[in-house]
Image (cartoon, rainbow, N blue to C red; front, top):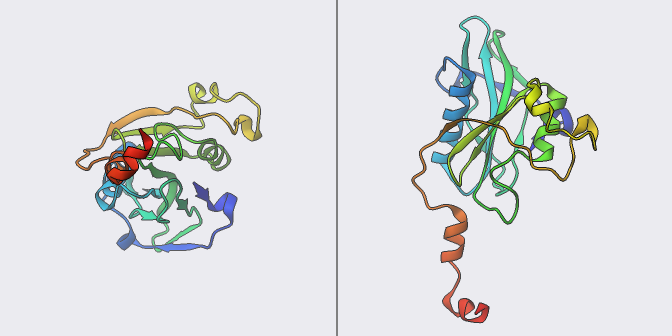
Length: 192
């Protein structure tokens, strides 16, 4: 996870062409963003910002983007909108089903650190089980997880758990299973 506040990325100019249809709640927008990401590919992590319209009180998600990586994605928070009523209020990202590279069911220390710095709720969609979780830096239950060992209390070795807010429909074989099935049979003999 790479946020512009930490990574100094370039400014992204966004219009309604880059946004989803409107949703009534932030959770709904996040769940649909994860579903949209999964429909694009379950092989790479995707992410984007979640946006609020101050005039209509509706939420949108940025059309998901990927860095073509199985265990990271950059999310640019330095967004300039064509409509001044739009503001970034959160972000979403996904975790692929590659448990040997990261822990797909929890938020990484880097995720939590960035949510603390930005003061924004973060959403993570798990492509192994379809669960979408939320981590809120203003919720005392989440802050109790922080042990004070690192910046903002974030321990760089801890996986953090969020609140499940929904579940997406899964209809593809998870990558880890596909990877196992793709092992040539002569290699399986060597493993035994």
